[in-house]
Every structure is written in structure tokens, then in C-alpha cells.
Length: 66
Image (tube, rainbow, N blue to C red):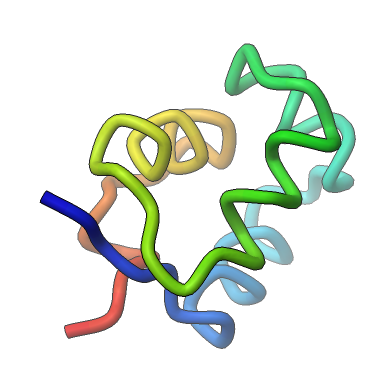
């Protein structure tokens, strides 16, 4: 199953977290390069998006497109 990150929702979650992209990537256990790849991907695996959400400290449903 592949999902898509909503850019607006991601930006809001990042702002609310007070983290930089690098800090969020580190918390997600991903390199910054991989983190950007997932963000810029039109479709990503549920596992990858789960890691991004974990890095931000939010639920997956808060950053994916409806």
C-alpha cells in the first residue's frame, strides 16, 4: 500500500514540532536524504511515511492526503 504526504499538513506538523528537517529525520531514524526522498515522492510506502510521522511526533493520519 502506498500513501502520499500532504505538503500543507506536513508543513504544519513540522512547524508545530519545532524541529528542523534534519532533527525530524534523525528522530525518524532516517538520513536527511532519505527523509527528503520520502517527502518529495508522489507515493511512498506506509512504513516510510510511518517513520516520517514518528520523527514529527504525530499520527500518520495527520500528514497524509485524505
